[in-house]
Image (cartoon, rainbow, N blue to C red; front, side, top):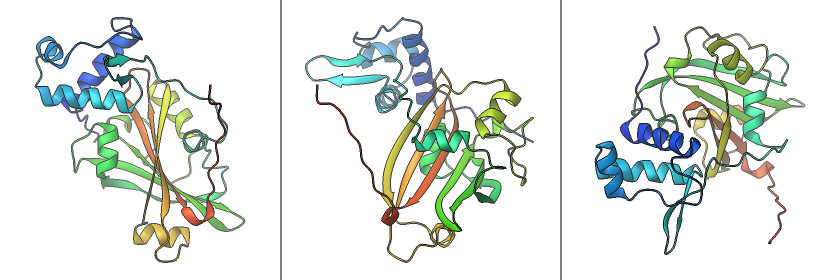
Amino acid sequence: MAYEVEPPKYVRLAQTMQRRIEDGTYPPGTRVPSENQLVQAFGMSRPTVVRALELLKRDGWLESRQGFGTIVRGRPEVVEQQDRRGREALERDESQASGRLVDVGEVPVPARIASALGLPKRTKVLVRRFLVEEDGEAVELVSSYFPAGLLEGTELDSPELLTGSVREHLEARKKIRFDHVTERISARLPEAGEAELLGMPDGVPVLSVLVVARDASGQALQVSDVLLPADRQELEDTYRLN
């Protein structure tokens, strides 16, 4: 049986503010109400308001400008690039991809994933873990997490390969729409099981690309942790300075 877990107050406040940005109540380029005003308007504590503002800044809806305070940026721009790890993780067809499904099941939500999904610690979530291989060599480990409320009526908990992408599956079965993705890159040492799957020697770190896929309201629909052996990666970007 699937259970709906209500997001924490700060996540719900951030979602409400996102909707106000979307409908023009908080127009781009204007200052958001002060913390005191938000506390009064929403009847929430100052720590809740501060966390909501931090979440909106992290995801690109707001920004702090010295001398001006917190400014509305509007909906974060979605950059269309074919090499985005998030797009690959969302649109990979398991039945056609080179690799194998290594794990499907419920797990206690990891701390980083809980924060992204807006779930309390130790909440059970579904994980689908897919190992991408090229020429017989493991090159990428993708662990995708889903809140319990999305599982009913889907085949996400099936140990069989999905036909089509997870995004297509969810949009068709749950009548939802993926709107934008946030990616955060960090480095860490892999856990023993991760290192074994990726065929990595001791002491070699992985690059972790945390991919958070959201709907237009900012609600997280899927979080994927894409692990890449750091000794096999080279990152390059070119941009203008105007």
